[in-house]
Amino acid sequence: MTVSPHSLSFTASLVNCLLSNPPTQQLTVQNTGAGSLDWQATPQDSTYLTIIPNTGHLDPGQQGTISVSLICQQVAVLTTDPITFTSNGGGTVVVNVSITLS
Image (cartoon, rainbow, N blue to C red; front, side, top):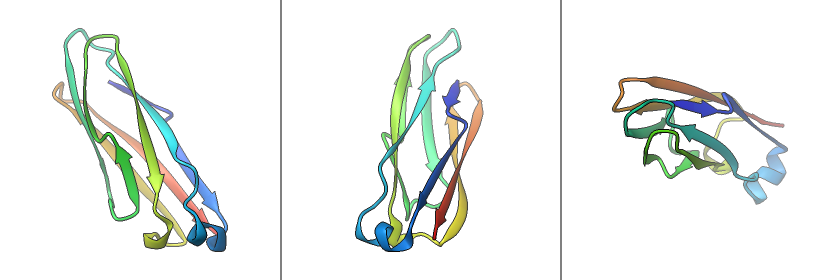
């Protein structure tokens, strides 16, 4: 399993962020193995990061797109929150999400 990109960054002014959440960003999960892949994505803090879908199934060679959204009203001004991807193959991938509100 691979996940790309390896990190995401949300940067916005605090005022604008409180009025409207920043645009959703995308991650791609790919099954690089020979068997079927069942994966799950878990943010460290789900109160301000939304992942859709947060689980999935991929056949060998397939890939899927995940949307990651920030809920500004719930987040600290400066933080990094990892999203951990686990799979039935035993692999773990971590994507760090950097959040900066100024």
